[in-house]
Length: 394
Image (cartoon, rainbow, N blue to C red; front, side):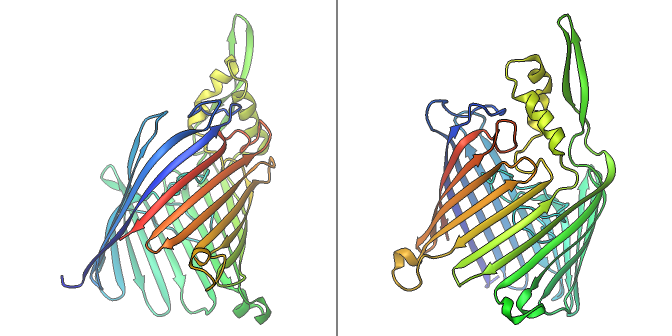
């Protein structure tokens, strides 16, 4: 045990927002002034011994003045190197298969990240995984157990013989989605296409599955003494069909500190613009019977991935200068613009990041949604949200 090594980090975050009084979601904070809505502590501990094992503990506690406090273990697992080619990992873990920044079409395994971007924690699933790596290929397998039986299983095959190309072929089965297949990859455009494309990386993926992950929108009627009220009722998830999702992206490394990225993605089983507008039209009629009848939908709408077509563009300036001043050398800016192409709403985020104090990173991240009252981002619960976080490594 002489090579045992412990590392980790602890992050303190403070979230503040100005509520959107037109939002369909319950307000957190004062309507007339900005309010602190989150005080979060996140700790990550990593313990490892070279070529033997590693383990991760990732947990957070969020104190919320206007709602219930939330504590959660995001990941807790141990990985063992059985041989030089075989690794086994056991516990709650996030297993990301495929390429993508905001959305990964071939990620059938994990619960999605918070689509608003307010909680970027990588929440895992209890499972057993193994990685077998050879010179020409690698295979990753996964088993999830529920109620003392294998609930979900999958395998990823990645050939290693193509220089400049990273490919994943994926099969997964789970009760929630049925059988799922996917292909995801990335290529170095300079190496594969033309030397003039220095700095460009192209990425993409396509996935298909059998059951919808979204509750069905059902047209229903409520009859009382005052007449008939039409409303969208909450249906069941798992409607059978052929659902295809895909992504196309490009990343450009303009300099050692500047990265530009653009992604278009399509979610095959998400709601059409017509169905989603029907939901929002009902939910924005506050104080009416129609709104009350449609209110069960509020627990199933996570704004950001409810419709089908999105475009994300981001710019990451890792340091304003190189070698001129420690203050500006360690000060970065991130700008991201996520747009729903179905209803033309979106959210812009701006982050200011400083690594001036070495192992301590200070980040101020701000979100500004926009859109009409009955659009996806236009009904976000805030008109702006700001989060100040201090991450200390050890």
